[in-house]
Image (tube, rainbow, N blue to C red; front, side, top):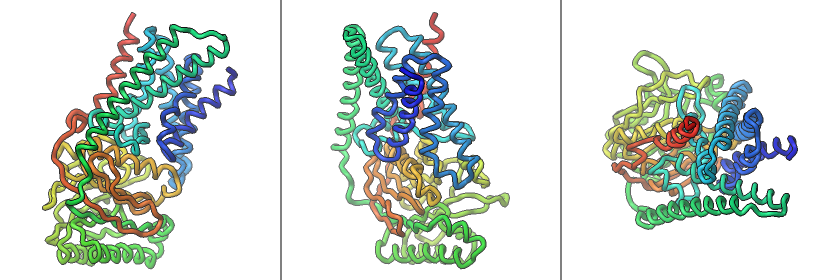
Length: 480
């Protein structure tokens, strides 16, 4: 195999990963095959290069939407993910060369990817993007996430890719030598049967859960306001008061319309829908409190705020149906290099008459740990408030929305995702999207949610799965 072909195959893996995230998760089941095929005969130095190529291609396509924040930021993200690609490819290649048992050689090397997925959720500079989130439409399969987190779904996808890679390797060898290596073929068939059995068990388990838990038709009615205001308006509002006024006017008009026509129990504004600190400026504050009280509706409002020591915060407020501010959440995980707010203290639910609300803002929903901690702390309904108007033309907006489905299944909670411009969703505890709004026009999305207080295995024990392949890999390298 020529060097150019190996480079192209590595790039193809990056391309297929991007396509699986953006268009259809079915591509994830073969996305790693070209890369794994190249690494099967690569040297240690070559594995680093091929990992970097795949990482650069996938990241450049997926994260193009962040270029609005500057080319430097875009380049930093590409470098960050390219390094992950290099390290993953290196570890994969080392494990391939070290493990002599044929079946272990098929199952352990791709598993290390799951540990690197987890690494991308820790530290101040991190950008989670588990391949398991691409399967959000495959509802029976993703029920596994309630036990393993999204990483379990990633692992199954990677094992299928690894088996298919071995099929390709043996097929090429047969074409080249005109002879079948019966021992290798037997190992591939054994691995294929094991993976197929795992898939059947997981899908059977998921289907059984879905049949026993049909979609509920009654409960708490929630309405989400999606103003779909373009980013250009937000950029102009500081200099042009008339633009700022038109934005706030739109959201107040939509609020009154939703209260009159939808009559929700909960009304939700997305993240930073209005530039002003609407629950600190008296005119706006009194209007919202009055609307909540007269309509007997509970409000969840995404809005800028001020901390006790005078710093700006990215916040979410809960206004009770009695017309009082009953709680507040300040965003904890801030976007590196972009958000200059004071971070909040933790993921603590806001008690209300309709249950305990767990709230996260924007980028935080990509981290499995955030809503897991809110659930452990007593959250009974989960809210994601975001404003993706700057990402509306990029695939990053889809990736961000898809994460919400995993968070619902992991914690068995209804998830309400209110997006100012992008994708608003209402998701049930089994990952079924009950209501969605993908339009680019202002819209009021209404649906039914319910409270839950049970805890899943994942909620209780967290991110244990990524450490299993790490432990097995360490055993491999320590063994003489």
